[in-house]
Image: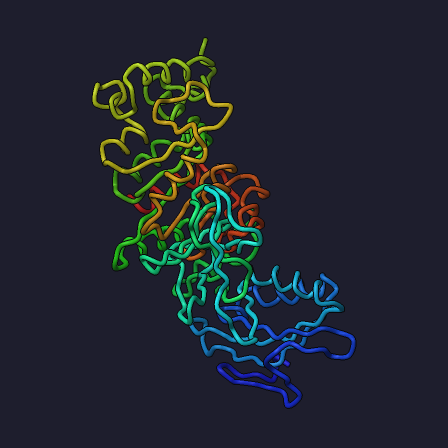
Length: 433
């Protein structure tokens, strides 16, 4: 069938029965549609595979293919299953990939929340894809889509927001069910070869210098956009352990990094390496284990706690170089989210994980590129917060880590299997000269 289609050609078989759901033999059928870059990406193939894997069947009844890779395609599919519940469960699963019913659209159902921190039964669970809902005959867009939230409509401001469960308040109007809700398909930038080159699954065999050059291009493009886009770095302590701290500090100093998310370990070892010359007690310059070095990170944490904050330690001259130093000097915001295993922790670490996530959310406005460096937990936490249009790169030596984000719903995430330290150093050379 695809061989018969030309670019931008519209095709509809004579036997098509578009529109409302109906029975075909003993099967229950629903007509759905999706619009976007679904032909030149794995999206359509993945959706069709999911239909068959569920035991259902499909028939493509209408397809319009974009003329260029900048043009979107439109596909209409009849999906059939043996019973209504199986079909509804399947369509709910496909909805998270931008598949929407074509049946007459009704207003979304709004139900009042009765308790703080509790959504109504059957609430609509969000994705990070572009989302809109029909309310009183008018479509409202969600400004910052975020996965695993509820949709709350504010009648006073006429705005629709993705709200995490713990931030819901009694009296809020939440969307229940999927009726009247539409989502877009996963999108990736079409104005560069970077995403075309990296669009296959993460591989350790791709030329790393070429990948670094492509990512540097995207960071530059974000900075040059109007309004200018911000670049977020999410960092694990391995960035410091591998000796890439100075490279990351240079990226901050030269203005290429606008925001950093990390944990206590990253900040503590960055300070340790710049005050005592070790990281986890291992010499940054000679790679040798220093006597008593296992306690070095505790000593610097204790010192910073004495000053009261990392900023105060910089002002006092205790910390004179490194990533945290440059962040303070350049007034670049950072969020340090704590965990159970933290030593100390540093006074800047937010130990309440819910508050940490809310603080991360508050800094995401304007972020266009996210570079995640050797961090599994912070990578997942950040991925859960990012809208699908934020270009996201996950860099780790472990193949499983770089594919985990996409598996968990961050469809835009692209993996780079390489040492995060070497990558960071190469990126700094490319961007900073």
